[in-house]
Image 1 (spheres, one colour):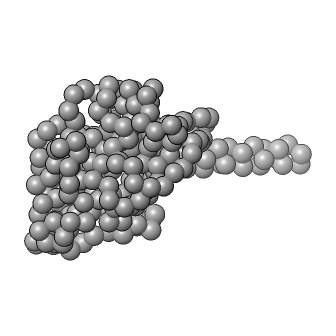
Image 2 (cartoon, one colour):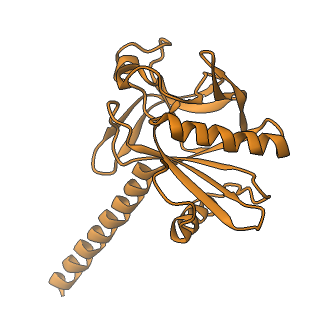
Image 3 (cartoon, helix red, strand yellow):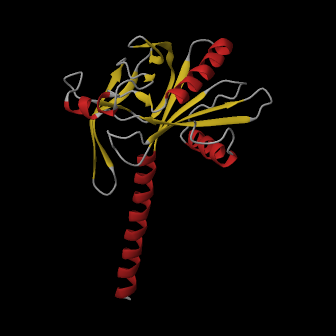
Length: 221
């Protein structure tokens, strides 16, 4: 089952605010999909702790939201044994317009990458501000959206991978509806909870520094 009900207006509004505040496009024609992957606040290759939101308007112009448990992180096997010499890659935060299409991932139905996106290779998190380190690389790398076969040890080399087959089938069904109306072209928007945390921590630190400066001024008076 999806993680949330069909409509959660507070969640819909929150997602729309995030899209618009970043300058991302929102797709609002009937049954036209907004596919939004959202990373959790941790990098854990052994668990499905991220979320994929499927947001669209129904035929009555009302928002519909389904949210599914996924991972956007490379699995442990591919972290230790990357496919390319440059290292494992995370899809970079951003909106990848018309970069995906219905196709096949290892012979199974999937949304596959058909235009260049940017990944961050050998990605780490360091320090209080959750600073990103790594090497950016753009191209077509096969960072697809697909189901999980096997186990979490080798589930993903940097793709978006669903935890549950039933969720994935629901996702594919809705993608087919979109395809029938608007053609075989899909946009993936990648949000990052860690990025939000970093911005909040930066603001907190700036506030503390400001208070420290004010205290110094008051002590001098």
